[in-house]
Amino acid sequence: MRPRPDDIFVCAFPKSGTTWIQHIVHQLLAMGYVSPMIEGPDAASVEAMESPRILKSHLTYADIPKGGGAKYIYVCRNPKDCLTSFYHHHRTWEHYEFEHGDFDVFFDLFMDGRISFGDYFDHLNSWLESIEKQEENILFLKYEDMLVDLPSAVVQISNFLEGKAAEIVKDEKKLDKIIEASSLASMKMNQNRWFSNIYFQPIHRDKFIRKGGSRDWKNHFSLEQSERMDERFRQRLTASAAGGWWKKEMAWEGGQNENAGEPRMAML
Image (cartoon, rainbow, N blue to C red; front, side, top):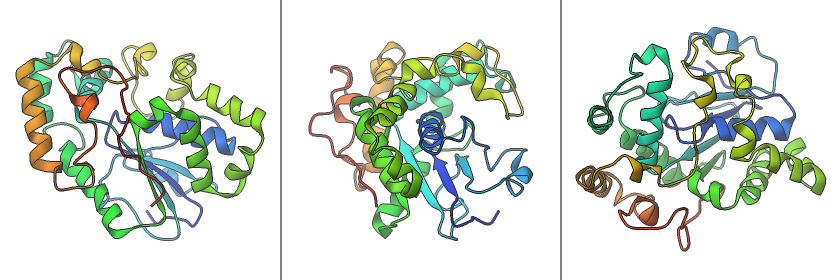
């Protein structure tokens, strides 16, 4: 597909906050709830959409359509919580045929990159290239920062989008309404709204947005699995911009949502 100047791409590895960001963008532009996946069976209908298009994707930075002045919002999440959420996602959607799947089995599949959209670390590293290239049309966000300070994230997104989105947050009442509608508690209500234009259905619709939050992985990982993930993180990300991220979120011992001192990504 060929991007248009006013396209907005919401990008992430699966279960890293795609639906959350998509919802915020729609609230800022008053355009409903759901965005089509450009790599899905409905991709042909994307060309027929009226502008501005809000599009979501799990493609890597190398594979995402570029050009035309489009803007890209990429959100990432620590790999332990991402893996845990993706495990529950596989148990929820019938096309995975994993409703009664074992966590240990899924852990190994994730670590080997033998899941939908491949290797988590390959994906994140591909988008980290945009930091090195200083791409001005890419906003890089962390899921955990949004948990700690959602209002700042909403304002950051609105300023990045400019135009109508930037104007709407100047109205304090409208901003408060968007923040409330974008809270995880609010998004867990009426989850049928997320399924209006998708081509397969979940087994349990009420579990699409299951929990949110940080450090749920501690309820599933063994110490050995945690150490394996830590070692993989060091091997794949230490030399990157993400090398110092998520120390507290990924620590075997630690409190929930402790982000003090962690770097925050600004508009690039």
